[in-house]
Image (cartoon, rainbow, N blue to C red; front, side, top):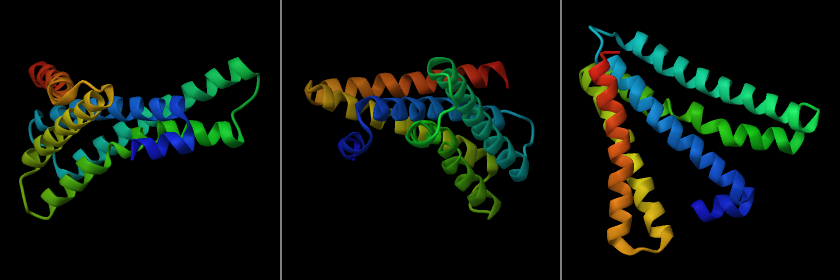
Length: 169
């Protein structure tokens, strides 16, 4: 799949898109751990926080990209540049989908909200592991390097969660 994206948008754009996806994943771990660590969040409040965090991240990235484009090119991004900018920043919005689905599942009574939030964090850590493994495979170092890269990426995501939980936010 990654090769197909690269063929369509180019290597630099695909790398920037993936960077935003990884950044959004790590950030969303912090958001859901922070929510799980609060007193008694309700599903509506948790959903609003997750959606607002994702929208705020996306808007900040979009404003920064647009400003950088104006400074560099002397004009607002339009056409292909604007589409590229929106494609690159889209994972910041998409990072809310998994947690919102799990919050919805908790609202249906299938699990406690806190469990849904911790599950969302766990899924995001597993996602970091998978991307790390895939990166290790792409580097050509074999299974051991792929697993090491996955473990390192998952450890970074876990460290973010631990710091967030320890800070009590």
